Length: 331
Image (cartoon, rainbow, N blue to C red; front, side, top):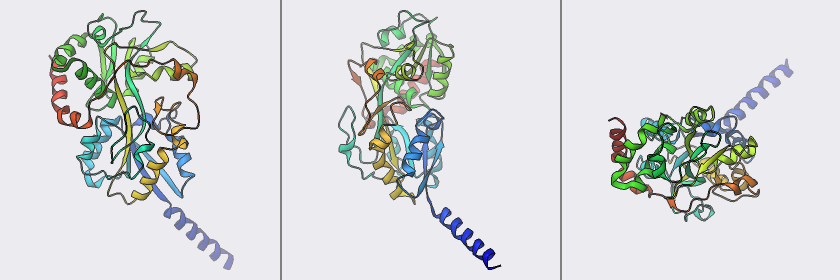
């Protein structure tokens, strides 16, 4: 009887300890936590540093994550958000949900010096039109050639209302064409096969052969070269330059796990996190690494010019530019 009581007490104590383990709830985009994405490896690596567990919540693409936070407001279950880019950070700060990260900004290794107090970067790459060499012998050499090219050669795009790549392409068009962007969208429309909610759907249609082009990243061909041993899919180098995406993470100020979230952001800038990114998220690392990039990364398109609006400029104009896009494609 005494042994039974001891066993019960031990079980209760063990259960209490298990319940006491801290849980860090992180909102992110779905492709980050797929079986081929970095989520599982990052979870395993971080959990070795603490008596804690990561709970990933996948919510479509980056814009969809922001939309979810706006709906939840102060009732959000998120402790940390990973998957915005700089086109969304000013709007995210405007929700009042995000606090200062407390991480040394000098740890960020991005094309431009990092100065954001609320968000830290974890990877970056330029957007690019990826084409299938077996279906296109003469890919567009500029955004202008894409806009005015053969309508029979289709492209799959992502929706800027729900997808950061979709928003990135909208900003790319705006950066190149300015006040004439709406006119250029109308010219491009016959080449658009479809507009998907997010990157995963778009790239899936492309690799299934539904269209010879898709909006993705200059780094996307590295996946095919490393994981599939093929150079079939390549990025088209555009003479006007390429729009840059810097992906970021930030903590929720009111989170009961704020200290753990800060620890994660610090961990994010270390090789334990950054070495995972290139061959799982197929982007360039934005922090310290111990492992050299695969040779395939040395064969990628290097844009002659980088295009990038400031977060505040996007925040100020995003709604108007989105309306312009909608009106252009609805007529």
